[in-house]
Image (cartoon, one colour):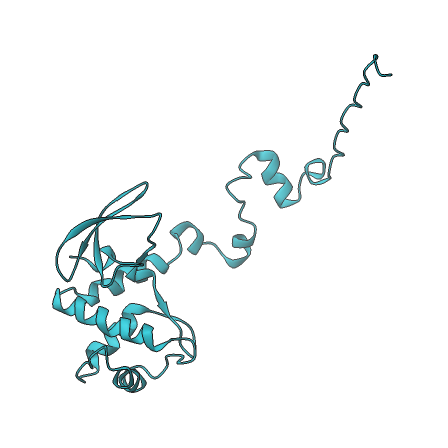
Length: 192
């Protein structure tokens, strides 16, 4: 099972593996009891774990970074039901968390999710590579100098005339043409 297929579903506790998706929802398998069910997109929202970020006092970090800190801490994971123990655990393990914006319910959820991931043997090291690949820019943009990035034409302006207008070469295209006025409405001849 891969980390990038693990999702959270609102209204359903725990974590799920994304089996398939449909236009009106997704087919998911619970990582806790291994049951498969359909979750409608009308009543549920889906979040990939690799896209979830945690507020810190510096820049936000990906959730997997917190999981790795938990793994490397060498401390026993507290019971997620003990709020004081969970908060004390995160102050030691990941002190950069912004405790004003990350609620205790979020910390409890992180502990529970970490336990589910470790119980299912999901490798967190593979997730780092997937996150790093998704955060890098496409090769054609990354190789351009900074000046060329600003002049890059959006996809909608793909015509030669539009490209010339963006680059400032075509004065006719950049000057605004006056809009045509609507023709006046004809009054009925039989108006009394």
